[in-house]
Image (cartoon, rainbow, N blue to C red):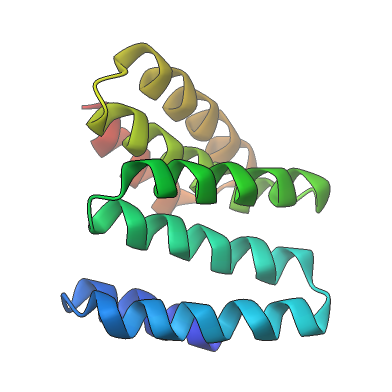
Length: 127
């Protein structure tokens, strides 16, 4: 998880190449540990990377993959963050209805789990 966090920092610093390398390493490690939550978090990070670099289809694939893992692990907080990512992908692709649906699902989960950070990010995405 530390590598995924480090990758997020690199992405914020506009260093996507380094973020990609860190996430690739993190994905291998999360698979070795067998933690579905850790793997979902890493794949969600890949989705954010692809969204950031304009690779919308890859972002959608990564977020959908992470969503399946979040649901299998019953990780509602992760699911909210993943749905936020999917909402952003849909929004950038001009699919407003799909974006709103994903964001509203994310908002409900964030409220249910008390995740204030996610609630704020979702509110910004909803406008």
